[in-house]
Amino acid sequence: METSRQVLILVLLVSWPNFVETIDVTSDDWLTKFPEEFKWDEDYENARNEILKNEQQWRFGSHQTLTSDDERLNKIYVKEKKSRLEKGYGDETLYRPSLYFLTHGYNNRPTNKVYKILRGLPKGALLHSHSTLTQDLATYPELLLSLDNCQLCVNKTNKQYRLHYFNKGVRDNYVEDHNCEECPKSSDAEYNATLKNLRAQLSMHDGVDYSVKDIQTIWKSFLSKLNPQMGAVSTWHVFQEIFTATLSMLVEDNIQYAELRAPFGYKWDKNGTKIPQEQVLEFMQKQIELYKKNHPNFYGVKFIFAMSRGVAKNKDLKRSLKTANDLSKQSDLVRGFDLVGNEETGRSLNYFQSTFLKFRSLPFVFHAGETLWTGFDVDRNVLDAVLLGTKRIGHGYALDAHQYVLEMIRHREIGIELNPISNQVLGLVNDLRNHRNKRLLDSTHKPGVFSKKSLRFSVNSDDCLIFGTRPITDDLYMLVMAMTHRDSDLRVVKKMAYDSIHTSLLNSTEKGELKSVFEAEWKRAVKELRKASELNKIL
Image (cartoon, rainbow, N blue to C red; front, side, top):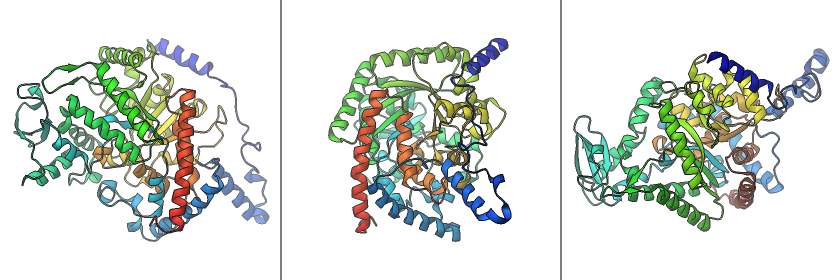
């Protein structure tokens, strides 16, 4: 088996397109003038400026163009951004991106021009978010309590909530060892207390200081946040409301398109009758088309079939791959496949490589490298993801420890899905200025070993409901304020949107259509934001 794997890897590398293409690092393609050519005593300032200029040319967004309208808004944006950074440089207690989001983010969002400009601009595509967790923490708990047949079930031992919407005696296995009562109405005395407790149990905003917890403790709490709505998402009338709320949240954050990870579990009505998958897919398609009709700046949603790596065995994987393939034949909504969950405690991609190598029906978009470890299967997931042909890398936090793999990613233009706030909350980094993917952004256009292609990125939220974030705006704000250079500007924002479209699973025709939708909305939003800013109405 080991010999066959070595042969496979050798074949993949030898046959790599343009594998022998290299860059002469002493040529003008690399540096305009190589530093050693300067006479330091005479040309120190020139050498220094030349090096800074070339560093700037390597950074993400540096090659993106802006229109004259863009430039006018850009002046306002850059002025405000630098002002915020300089205040933070003088007093880090004023610098929000260095602080912990759970403490300083959700209940205290920025009100400055940078955030408001980012909020108003179109974002392109959201490529890394989980379907039932793409919800607004401010309104979602109220929605759940308001739905028909709602029962609030409290665990007899740990007092944890579980919402149940089936009729009595139907699928009661969800609420064994729970005491169930009808959900309180907004007019009831206990409603506000119940709402507060439910919000805490659905999210990491529960009074615990996770910034001082170890990663596995954080993950254990994170997974517990899925419990309150475990039965809710499988109840047909509830699911329909949840999905509609997801679409609304995407539109409100000016996102043109999304590819959501979804488990595609079965749905039942409140009497226990199973809903055919065809009916579920048809409902989602109709809702998407309705939102596209009502919101011309919205292109739609596709899905990535998601399977948990925590309990998976090869036979389970084969079954899930077959289900995903069958669904993709029923509807073009299903576009890819992924393994989700805690990489450190779940199965590695290498464990499943023999099964994955036999399956080529759907594109892979793997979570990979969401870890601080180096030299283990968990960080080597980035290598196996690339060898298995992934179209994108989810998180990729360990990518900087695998420089050869990074060059392969650059050459194949495999998208890197950034999730800064998720990485912070789940314990990989406290201060986002130390985020390891920051170095990848700084070397986006650095000439590669195999080709001159640039790295491709998207910015994402991962789990809005649990973290209390918006689908893109909050993470985008943290990225531009903590993970990019002081002098970076709207080129970063525009380039991030274009990269998200480029690395989506849409075909070339669909990408062209989405790009047109994005560009029309960008043009409209820039003019509106510029006028509002110049009149100080954005303050």
